[in-house]
Structure formats: C-alpha cells, structure tokens
Image 1 (cartoon, helix red, strand yellow):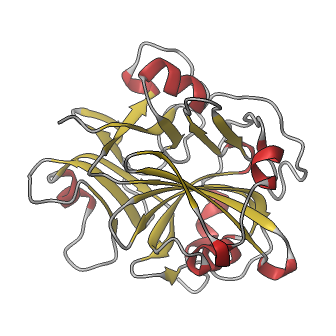
Image 2 (spheres, rainbow, N blue to C red; image 1 turned 90 degrees about the horizontal axis):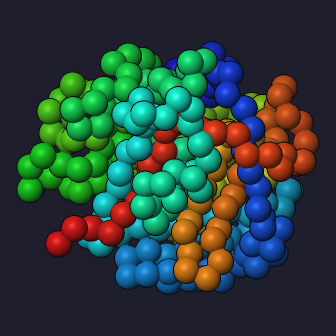
Length: 287
C-alpha cells in the first residue's frame, strides 16, 4: 500500500457525529513535555500520562491511560448486546456498566450499531465482516498461556481473524496506525483530525490514547513513537468529534472528546455529547 493505511479512512466514515468535551482546557494546561514525562498513579496498574509535543511546528497535547492487564481486564460493550435502542457517551457507558474507563471501540456503520470491521465479543458477533484493516486487538484469552491482551498485525504469516477468534473471547479489527514493532504505517497527507487510539507498549500494557489537537495520522504516529511510552503498535479507534476517552476518577472524572476533522468539523468548538454504540472498557481483574 503505497500510501499505507491512510487511504482507507475516507471510505469508512459514517453517519454518527458529535461528542462531549468537559474540562479539557484545565487538563491540557497541566501537560508535561515528553523529556520530563511523568505518570500519575490512579490505582495499582493504572496510570495517566500527559505529554506535550511539537510536530510540524504545532503545539499539541496527548493523554495516555496506561493499563496493566495483570491488574485490569478489558471489556467490550456493544449496543447490539443490550436492550438499549441508542448508544450513549463513554461516560454513560462507564456509569451504566460499572467501568473504570472507556474509549471508542472503533468506527461504526450508518445503522449506528455495527462495527466497521470484524467484532466478536464472547458468543455475540456484532460484525462478521472481515475487511482490509490490518490490526486486530484481542483480549479475554481462552487458554492460560496466551497474553491477556495483545495486538496483532494481519499481514504477518500465520495470523488471521479466524485464528484469533479461536483463541480469544473478544476480537476487534480496526484500521492500523503503527505496525509491530514501531513502524509508522501512514503516508504524509493533508487530512487531520482529533484522535482516539488503542496501543500496546513494550511490556504488553494497554494504552488508551487521546489527542484532541488535529494531526495527520502520519504526524500523530511519529509523535507517539517519539514519546517515552514504549509504544510498539497501535490502531485507530475514532477521529474528529466522535473520539472519546473517559476515566472514572474518585475525585474528578476525566472526560475528553475530539472536535476537528478535515471536511467535516473544521474547528475546535465541539461541546455536545452524541452517543456512541460500542466501547472498550476497563474493570478490575477478577482474582
């Protein structure tokens, strides 16, 4: 793919739009430059990192929630598994499903429910469609010798969606950003947007990544790879005003939402919460 994964974005956009932003200004004002990175411990095995970077001469802020799968489990929450008629914000999914944090599960179709790409959660299949996206996140392993969380590249010999679905209870296919190990898979392009992404670090920890500042995915990937977060691979979850990250903090909840997207919302003014149908959530690991 000469333009790498970048050309896939335009054909996958869908009808659901808009999300909520609360307290972003205060959060981003507190970010630290990458060379002096620090992690705020929220609980054992869960940390919040805040970073400033300067890709292409623009000051941007990136928030990373780092989750140790030895202490926390990921949970896929799909609208199609509930009795709800409509989706809801990441905050509401957390409140109604007992999640400590949540992020978009990926892009969805114009029915506001079906995932774009393959998505199976236990016995429930939200989407059987296997497309050309080259990244799969898998969790809730069916055998004790498998990683509790792992991101796989589908263009590696011996890796397939079907094979992963035989090994993990939850499998979700999304557009790839960074191929293992640390390969930026997007070419240079003009389009840019706010971003919610899922990553894995060199210790196998889960990274919920949020950047409200609009960047091209090439520049975002380069920036993420330059940060001291040990990123080895990543996949795109959602862009523009639909991107969300919510962390249920004891003292002051963190709720972040995107805004800017080329050819759609070309400003930083989004402040309305629209529902999303599917989220990846975090719960304490059962012992």
